[in-house]
Image (cartoon, rainbow over all chains, first blue to last red; front, side, top):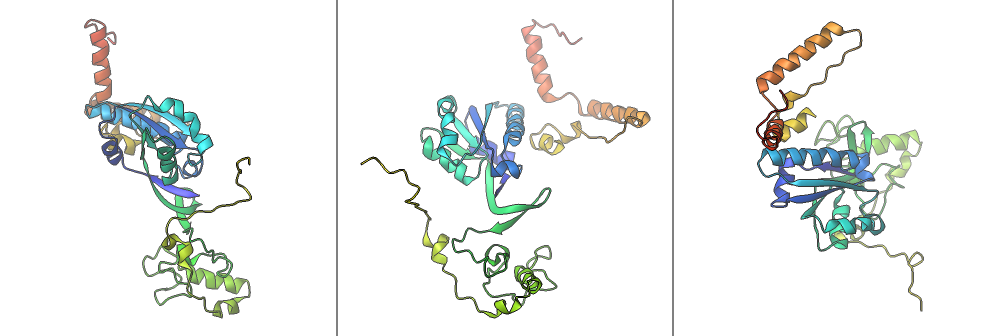
Length: 226
Length: 66
């Protein structure tokens, strides 16, 4: 899932500027699961904004909405008829949702209420860890299902490095060494010899180094009638 | 919740959670007394003060709370 964290209320109030009427829009997918921007968080933040701005002497009117998925037109289109009432929209979706709102409704400014942080999973209740960097050229098939791009601090393709000590990374004792994990998994599978194959330099043009990415599936496109 | 009240300037000390069973009447009474004392020290909720003032004004100066 996409994992995000709410911005501080001070930063949000500053972003809202002179807006007097605000619609806070949550997203019912990833950011709901990570407790950052779902219906409940929209309610809590909206109440906090009403109280804080009133205490600060500049009360603003705050309304609430949550859509199932803020990153798809069909889910955000029903908001269109409401947006004319508001000075700005505060989105509690990830950066994709914020951009979808701005792209679909260019007459209304949508501001981000979250910092989109990483692609990861809940390791335990209240703890999320990064697992994928969407590099566009997945290596998990040769690294025994453990990603050295997202989980090795140096993104090494052939590891571990000399900074791996007792199974943890030199940057922080709380960070497991990804290559130690890969090595142990290879041992469990009885396939350590596969790690003797030196990985060639990675094709980073399929990652962000190649600029913004796009996938076109001609088999799925709805072609215009000829 | 206390963190939110601190962040918005209302004061996180205004709320506290006590874990008590139905058999802990003495502790319940102590907790209530402690919170009443704390809230008296902190004074009225500023949002409530403003709301009450508006209500009093609309009632022509009469305070219906008393």
